[in-house]
Image (cartoon, rainbow, N blue to C red; front, top):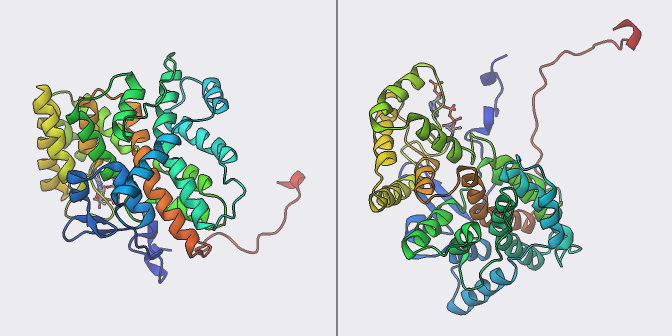
Length: 380
Ligand SMILES: CC(C)(COP(=O)(O)OP(=O)(O)OC[C@H]1O[C@@H](n2cnc3c(N)ncnc32)[C@H](O)[C@@H]1OP(=O)(O)O)[C@@H](O)C(=O)NCCC(=O)NCCS
C-alpha cells in the first residue's frame, strides 16, 4: 500500500507538527532562523556562544551580571572526572570521537550534584544544562588527544568556549579572527528547532528519563551523515575533488549516478539555509586570509550546478567543513564541534519539554501478515 493511502501519515514526519516551542524558528520563505526571536546573523555578528547558550536556556539575553555569573559557572564546570578520563583511555583508539563523546555523557550523570533531583525540577535542569554545555569541549579534546597518544590539556579559565576548545586541542591560544570564526560557528550550530537529534532528545526526556540520557540520544542521532555527520563527509568529498577544475565533472558525475552530495539540501529550508549564507562568507574570508581559495572555488562551482540542476542550496555543513579545514581542525572533530554547540539547543529543548511534559508516543500502521499460526521450532 502506498504511503499516501493513510490520512495523517507523512513519511519521515515531513511537515508534521510534533510540538510547540518558544526556543527557535526557521522561516523557509525568507531563509531565516531566530533564537528566542533574535536573528542568528545578529547573534553571530555581535554575540558570543556563551550569550547564545544563556539565551537558549533562560529565554532572554543575559544582563552583564548574569553573563559574568554564567561564564564563571561554565569555567568552573569545565573539568571532567578523572575516572571518565581513565575510561576514555580504555576505549579503542580507532573509535570516532562522537562515540567517545556519547560514552562520556553516558557516564556523567552519576557525577552530577543534582543526580537525584526530580527530572522535572526546572532549577536543577538548568544547573545540569550548564554542566553539560561546559564539559563538551573538554571531553572532545581530551578524547582526541588521548587517542593520539597525547596528554589532555587542562582548560584555561581565562578563555571562553571557542578559544578554550582550540587551546585544549593543540595547546595554542588562537588569534582574534580565528576565535571569532569558531565562536560564530558555535552560535550558528547551537540550535535548529525540531531537527532529528533534538527530537530524539525530547523523546528521551519525555519519558521522564534524565537530561543526560537526552544528550546521549542527541549525540547518537547527530552522528549520522544525513544530519551532523554531513560536515565531515562534505570535507572528505572536497578533498576527493581536490581542485576547482575537477569540480564540475565530479558534481555532474555524482548527480548522474544519483549520489547524495553531502552538505546540500535541507528538509526545512527550500530557498537556502540561513546559516550557510553567513558561514560561506566567513569560510571564504578565512581562505583569502590563509592564501588558500581552493575550497571556496570548488564550492562556487558545486553550488552553481546544484542550484541549476536540482534546485538545492548548500546547508551549514558545507561551508563549516572547509572553514574548519582551513583552521587546521582534524576532520573527525567537525561533528563533535557541532555537539559542543548543540548541547545548548538540546538542553533548552529538554528543559522546555520537561517544563510541560507529555510523553511522545506516535502511532503507526501495521502492514504485516495477520492470523499467522504458531509453528513449533522442530517444524519450522
Ligand atoms: C538533508 C536531507 C536529508 C533532506 O532530505 P529530504 O528533505 O528528505 O529530501 P530528500 O532526500 O527526499 O530529497 C529530495 C530530492 O532532492 C534530492 N537531494 C536532496 N539532497 C540531495 C543532495 N545532497 N544531493 C543530491 N540530491 C539531493 C533527492 O535525491 C531527491 O531527488 P529526487 O526527488 O529526484 O529523488 C538531504 O538533502 C540530504 O541527504 N542531504 C545531504 C546530507 C546533508 O548535507 N545533511 C545535513 C543537513 S543540515
